[in-house]
Structures are given as structure tokens and as C-alpha cells.
Figure 1 (cartoon, rainbow, N blue to C red):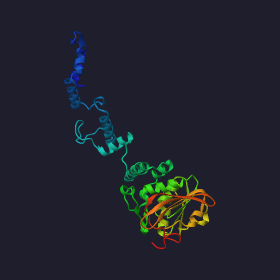
Figure 2 (cartoon, rainbow, N blue to C red):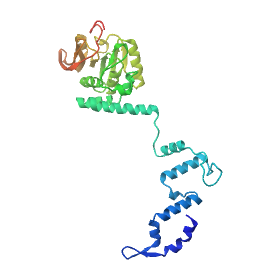
Figure 3 (cartoon, rainbow, N blue to C red):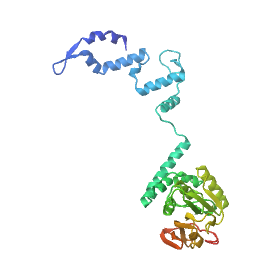
Figure 4 (tube, rainbow, N blue to C red):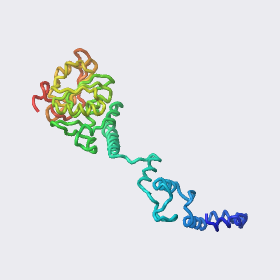
Length: 329
């Protein structure tokens, strides 16, 4: 504090003045409550001395500490002990250190992309799935975890979660999020179930099935799509998905009976082989109709020669090409 202030401090301690209710108030208290001496003391302290820590706010003390770390001393740019810019001061470095100290860190572009993807998935689950009646918590969790944008190359995150099918290579599509979730839910998959998927596409449906605990075998007639899907699935921890190349329109007798079969392309009819390859108590989900529009059919096998079938609503899929579907694209 200024020397003249400290010299007169003792004389002010004993001084009193009559308060508004007749009591005696120490004069030093009134002075401490006034604004004038505080401003004068701070002004004189800044002029004659380096600022004391107790005059500074927490952020100012932090900035002062960082300046000392940057310059290594209290030196000034103009060589004088008072005034001038601190040597080596770096506001960016000081901010970074302060941010790390208090737990705030600048996010890298990859971290920002991950955060944007997580927000988009959360919105998709709430607005497109839950509001339309998807109730299986495992399906909702899988849809909210698997990054859909990684299965639609070239499509930005802002569009990857749109409520629509999106084009991929070879004239194929990736189904809208709701359809992927609905077909998965209709299968009633249990952990460890062996599921056959016909029409791998980008691999997104297979990833969702694997995320809910299924052991997936998937068949794709386009070799390039199968290779790319295999790589994507492995990159996201789904190495155990068995991706094969071939005509899956009549199923895969090699692994029958299956605990569920899902067909992601439209067939003009349901091949008998698909019904026969179902295990008792399991389901087949397949779009059936003409090329323009179809019904999503659910076939449940109740016994060796007993099947129950019903429609889950109108859909539109690309054609299932093969011996058990359409003969040509």
C-alpha cells in the first residue's frame, strides 16, 4: 500500500464518528467502505509497486502466473522495472495452459466430427425411430451407436441420417434408418442367433444386426460392394460378420436352419427355399411385390410344415436379382 496511507493508519484506528442511529462507528470502517481511498490505493500501488496478488482477480492471477512461466523472470521489454510489455508473453499459450488446468480443451477436427455424428444419431433415434414405435432397446442402442455416415461414402454427416434411402455404388441403396431398425426389430433377434442377410449393400444392416448380438452371414452379388462392406465392418469391430459373394435369392442351404433371414431387396415372390431354411420359431422378413412398390412380409415358422405370414406395411426397395427373384436388373 502507499507509504502515506500506512503511516496514517494508526491514527485512524482510534477515530470515531457518530452513526445514523447515534452509535459510535470507527472511522477506519467508514474509510474502508468508501470508494475513494480504495481507488487511490490501487492507483498508487500500480504506480509505485508491482500489483499485489490480493488486488487481482483469479483470472488476472492466473494470467500473471502464465506470463512468468513464459518469460522466466519479471523482465520488461523496455528494460525498466516498471511498465512495458512482458518478455515472452504469449496469450495463446497462457489460454491453452489455463484451459488444460481447468479441464477445457480445444477439440480437433476429428473430435468435432465425432460430436456432430453423435448428435445426429441421437436426433435420429428420437425423431425417426422412437416416435414411430421402435421399442426394442437393443435396436435403439445399436442405431444410436453405429456411425451410419461411414457406410455411405461421400455423403456428409448432415445428410447420412436423413429419413430416406441413400444411393451407394452399383445402383444399390442403403435403406432409411427407420426401415433398418424396423426389419431388425421384426426379426426378434436374440444374442447369439445366426442370422442370414441377403443383400449386403454397404454393410450397414449387417452392422446393426451384429451390434444387437447376432452372428451374421451376409451375401452380396456385387463383388466390389462385398469387399468394401467387409473392410468397413472390420474397421468398426465387426470382423466376425461373414461376407460372401454370390446369388442369395434362394438363401444359403449350407448354414440352414437359420435363426432369422432378412432380405434387403424386393422379390416378386417368396422362394420356397427361404421358408424351408428357417428354424422353427424364427422369422423371415422380405419385401414382396412388383418393381414399383412392395409389402414388407413377415413369415414365421411355427412347425415343420406350419408358417404364418403377414404384412408390415408398404415399402419400396431395389429389385432382388437372381434365381429366386427378378432375372435382370
